[in-house]
Image 1 (cartoon, rainbow, N blue to C red):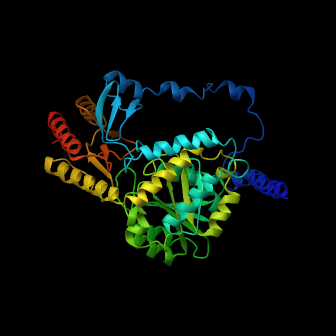
Image 2: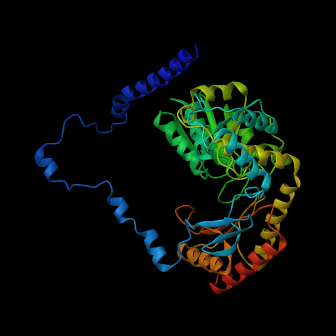
Image 3: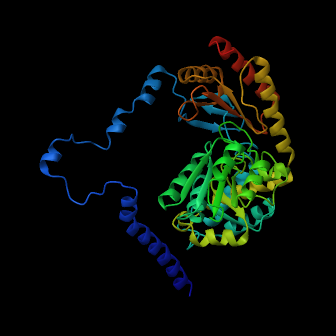
Length: 446
């Protein structure tokens, strides 16, 4: 019976894919896109230059130029990780750019749990959750996370990035609408591009702008299904979404709400339960998803919500069905991190205290920052090359941060994206401020 049910589901997915493929020529005709029905004649082909699809790769030299100038800030190998201090290129530097918000990646209980899981289950599951890749550990973590978040059910995915791709195109289908903030994380963008490929309709509104949201959503058919997806804490700026007003608009116009709480869980809300909890709107958000790569000191993703919706994703999401399941070590580490989060809520208090202290310190030093209440504190530089130079001075002096340049951020908002941990002590934070101030003065930023 199990094999028949699996075959039936896979057959439905294949039939759906074939239906989509068979409709492509008709759709292209409607859109008045050219369809190649016959090969070009030889004369026409001879008149056109032959293009190499790799040409764009050969012409991309921006990274090489920054490397040659000595300012390249990316792909720096961490050789030892002690949380607030790491070793890079043979020397110790203060880490002020990690998403290890509660400082649990080096916690003895988290490391021990991962080691025990490898000893018991091996290094991988060698299959998808749907088939041979479900362990009792997966079920336990799903049950624990659902209870922690106050929801009926939970489903794990292999990465946080993949979670958005597992949810969005599975729920938003042909003729339905996906509504998204223009500053949403790249995982959401990837998810809605997949939904668009399946002929869903995509609508974007200005960042955290409720008036613009109402402007665009009011133009959509009221009776048609709609899903709004937003970051809870926006990953670049650290801003928290205006969820109360957003909920009012979505209720008015018949839209369900999904919140990406990757940078919110373990950071804001009661006991670190995220954005909905932060506003007391736990029952108003339909689905919340997140990652294990930040607060939970591991790798993987999850979504929580109504049991029937999670059940649908569990049996219909290709990102789940056709991906290998999260490894035993990853799941065990996340479970151990959840234990610590529930037993030591004071870590969240310390984390926010550290971030607030840095916000105050940067402003007093004369830096321009983006205000917020999360663990992310962006320091605005305003120019690509100046950002690279600033990063280099900070790194050479013993602080590691993340340089964000255009087009990753709008022109004029190039920044040092700093982020903090519960395990940063005052002497770490004072040293970061000291080094920032010196470098900022040297480069004329302050």
